[in-house]
Length: 433
Image (cartoon, rainbow, N blue to C red):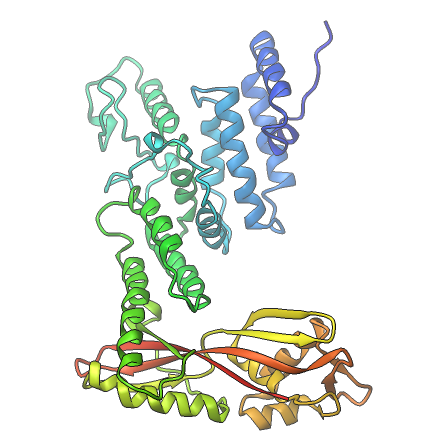
């Protein structure tokens, strides 16, 4: 019978659709006893096709997940998976941590670890150590966690014993792909936990600031999954960020009830600066000029806020945050989320006859020309603005008469105890006629 040559990398890339072929491959390897040779060839091909300098970290993470699933199906003992994991852990990309955190946060359907009983809990001494560094927490005899199996009773073959221990460890850990991805976050500069937490904070903050409705349920569930694996309060900073959202909703209700002139659609979000930005960073200079409705709402908020939270000085950051803007056309309505500067730029075009250069827009709203131009190009790419031959921007002919905008801005405040936090507010107004 002629041997069928399967390309392992292609089988992995098509898994689980390639299950039947993977089964055939298993039988072939058993028959010809060439598993090690195939893995060596696979590693070389993987370096050429996937682990080159131009490869996307997102694609590497995606393929690594398929590797784990395929090899566990091909060889449940994880003997074949072990060298692949070691190779992946030695692979360094600057944006690898970003890609890992992004993929874990997207796992709302629990596809990375479907069975809760398979959740892998990291031991304190294990954090920051990979398979290749020699941390094997599962002892062969007792199935217990041990920090250094070399100090256990001597075996006839020490190297063989260590191989069995690390394989047993991997067999347990690889059931939880979230845990497997976590170990990819380690770099030459810092440990996996430090990198992971910092990147998770950054992505969590951006997600929360985009949600004007204080909806934290999804983020709470996501964070609980991480806390199940990383004990000892590793993700405490992220928990505080989520609590900031919940407390801000309560604070907003109290301020709303304290005045009869409070705008119906005005909301505030108070954020702990120590967790939302580097405490050593200075508050950036803000030059963006706000429209009158925004300024009036800020003044109302500044009057009422100290009554509930005394001894605090507000420092508004109108260039930070996000804006949900609704553009009404003759044939359709588009809603999109943009930054405050980009929203302010489009608000300058009150009619389709008005034209501006990037320098004129920059002067009108108080930001550098380079930043204004970037926002203008964004609206051009969205087919909202058009650029003329003399480098002026104007509304497209399909633009309708009115636009409703929901604006969100950030603000830091100083506490008496010299700790600084942040406030984000949401205001609905209409100024594009």
